[in-house]
Image (tube, rainbow, N blue to C red; front, side, top):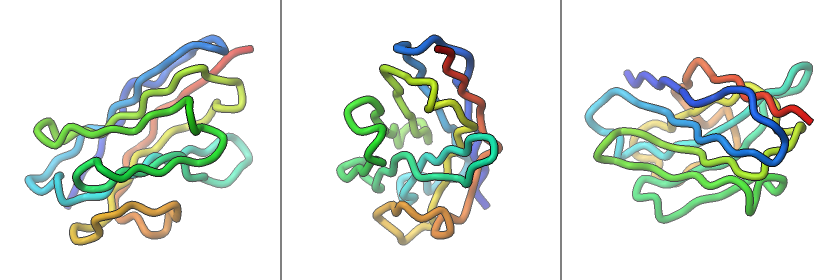
Length: 126
């Protein structure tokens, strides 16, 4: 069983930055492809970014490309989401997720992730 705990959310003005962290339990973090998703009020959960085991492969949703960066530190069992040039439309609860070991590459589909954190609120004011 893997436990995921997000942190780093908060209130920021448009154009500002935040860095989200997702700390995980378990001894095999380096074998989990990880992802970030978000859910705004009244909307479905949507894909934001994903990273492979080694960190060598990343993928982003189009609206965050060039602004957000996903990274991981396998020694610290932590995945990060650096968010720059934030916009009001980035306001949402952000969730990190892990695929089961053996799936080296992440995907854009929430249904293909097996473990989820509780989420952290990001609010961007205009």
